[in-house]
Length: 172
Image (cartoon, rainbow, N blue to C red; front, side, top):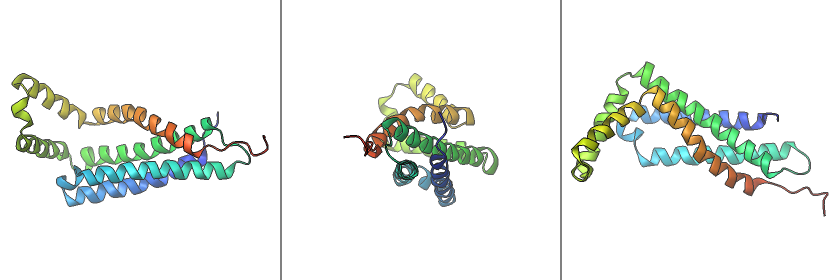
């Protein structure tokens, strides 16, 4: 099976835009980085990259563009885009601002205290939850989250593949 090159290119293009989005959010502050709008923008950007990759791959082939080909094109684009976003997250947290994870942790703690979540969770579970959150903000946790996130993007790729497939026009 060959790797769909248009998907890599479209995924990389969307990934560069995603990196810029993450950098702008970082420059605006922790509130912007954790904003629902930034998260929604990232989601829309990845899905748009998936559709563009499928459209480019479908245009490159004559005849049928099977569901499997459409699925693979969408998944490769999503993996490429999110991998570049992961790279930016690791660079931000490890090189540019090594204190970023502690800043995000402090902001998250403040938000959880304000919302009253801690009053509903037993004390022993709060400490375990905090330990898990700290680990998830480190590079190893981010890589694991990315790998598990590919399962989500696989489901989205199934949907995009079903939408973007094209039957062979020569068949009746």
